[in-house]
Image 1 (spheres, helix red, strand yellow):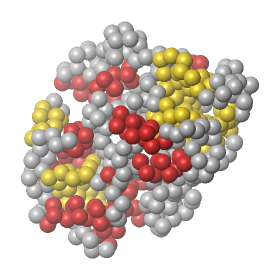
Image 2 (cartoon, rainbow, N blue to C red):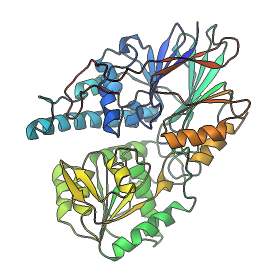
Image 3 (cartoon, rainbow, N blue to C red):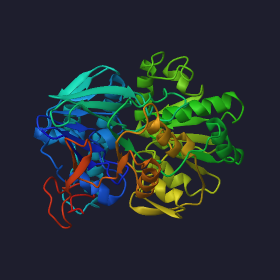
Image 4 (cartoon, rainbow, N blue to C red):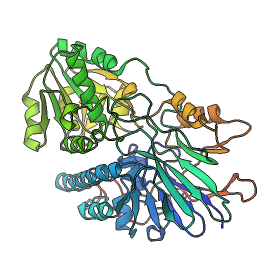
Length: 497
């Protein structure tokens, strides 16, 4: 019985993480993410996976972000019946994330039908609330460090990765005859050491194979203090009476930014101005973070007094649509935090449409921006951005603080992978764009270590005698090959390449 890995997502891209592990007796998925960003990637969400969802014994979920969890409702719709193993923090956040994603899917389809801008009639959501509830019901909570049999001969353990609340890297020991006790570690998204809110990543345990993310494989973060970076970027806009728009992921990033702003205002590095959190999801997530104050899941130095301590004293929370719209009538100076972090959808688009056109304003990006997103377009100097079907001129100021990222940078990835017993025999690089994958491959490659950069749907089989992996083909469809599944998403449903 051979042990195999098949990369059904997250290969050659920073999105859609989904990895099939098979040993002849068991088939489990490590993560089950949604593709985001470029349209050609989003179309993949509608294509059938390379495996039958009904054949999967279990999903092992590293964390709750959509690019790692967002395909779970679709998987349930296609016949998967669980279980989904994850940490308690991930289970709490995944419930919020998946229900919100279903709401957005349904809302986008309704808007496309009402305004008739879809090529498909009617436009359908990728999944709905019912499918999201199905997936949520399959979540099974597993504490960090506890031994778990995810399938016959496949034993799993979660370790803290420091990326967001509940995030883990996965240690898998395969005991089948062909694998001979082969140990694989899946990094998920690896966090950074010495960051507020989240604990440092735990050391890499001894393993034979490492599947490592490469989001920042070609770049290092600014090492200057984060509060100083944030204050330096924001202060001039507030001084001229402008509005600062911070697109921030509702999970983890909004909490980090608000904590840093509170510290900057308390230390007089920023003036006290109105701060608006325009995201019901961020409000829900902050309440979840509050449950874990005083536990090892959060850094005790940054959350001394419960969930509300994450917010500055005068913060205004906007949960209803009416409260969000009321912001359009308010002038600066003020700060608005809204999701999503890459400007792909949500309430932030309404603010973007207005704030981008004011030369006194600032758009502050607070993390990685994937190719094909409005955030990446702004980072690349776009003079217009397309919002709700029309082009909006960008006349405002723009800044980006990548030091706020919850992803380890290139040096931190190399240090973590080489820590402890040193680099393992085999490394697979995933969840990165071409420059990051290539740069990190060069840094990790050695006489002892083979570094693979898998293609989408490529399959590798472990050699029983050598302990090395050999390629066993790629299952990606040929150009123009028709796909099954729903053909009527708001902007989806065509053949993909």
